[in-house]
Image (tube, rainbow, N blue to C red):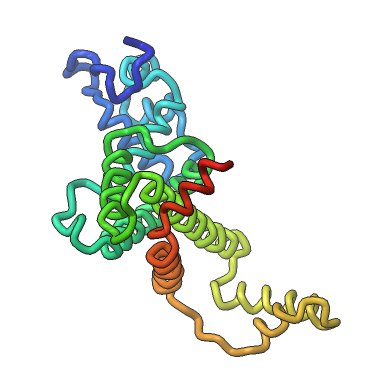
Length: 251
């Protein structure tokens, strides 16, 4: 029983005293701690303190901090894909866009989430599996993606873009906060440094980027534009499944 994943293990019998506990209460308390003080503030001792319960009681529900982190990840996925989308399978691009924007919005609400995305497997719990299932269903509905090789390749490509773009956006936001400046001031400072570094002509494209005026896009708009480029590429490239399969078989 103890070797089963946490989602498959029953919880201890309910005890109304001294303090009611459940995995749901534990995870919500851990998420609140991480939202307020960062991921480093999360421990079974601190979560137990927030719930007015000793850490030993928590071990009946969560065997380790690693399991707690897994549960926290799945909790955030529950905000993205809480139920099936009735449009799934009708508009594959729209479905992928909604899921991707939902994941971005959840990561912005819980910045610690993106640190876990890049450091541990995260498709284990029921909510994360629901997210993956809906992503695969959307890809399966795309014209020309006729087998799981193509569907999985497309899904992994989207995931690589979405996670990378979210990490980049949140890293920039953290850098701005750490410097104690607003976004425009930080960008002016960065542009000044790049201007000095490109003055001798070593980096012509960077110099052009600095000197040519370009509109400052809203972060969500920029994210969606990049996602659309990825989806455009999938729409064009992946219907050639036989060539893709040949390349994989010959590797």
